[in-house]
Length: 242
Figure (cartoon, rainbow, N blue to C red):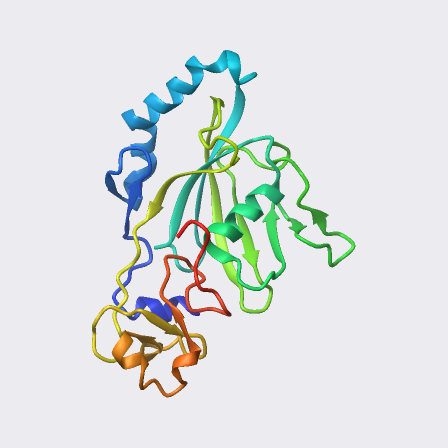
């Protein structure tokens, strides 16, 4: 799916809103980092974990990452993940929340090096490497899922803090996520519910239930409209967190 195909429906490249997982407040994408830094509900949860520190082992370095569609930045996440977690852990989370459809290969491209889910070239590195070994606050790097019908993400390391992970047994905690973009049917203008996996790059490839019944590619070519930059691609129908 092309970025242009979705922007033709009135979506902009950067203006979107999302919801804070701590206070349930709604914030613009441009303001969410500042909000998370000041969010009292987040501070209360973090301080609560610190108060139980004696039973949780030593405090750890926790990274705050922003993840967004490289060409569809209206899809975004803010997450926390321990610095000692691996790229493999991050890859597993990204697949679960946004990407997994057919077990495709994936890679992180960090500082000129490729970290591949399954090595292809002699110079490729494994994802079994701790985040703290390859990233630091201020860095930006890219991630690719599926080297055929690719979904590409941009990841920014916003900050690092010392404390305890907020996700419990799950090493990754979603702190904020974009609200689903409003996508209209390219035929009648009603809310789109299906995306044609053949022609979603065209405006008429996004359809409501009624218009989907008469779509020229056939109803069996329609995928559900889900809150992910992989919407309408390959055989993707939604993530574990949806």
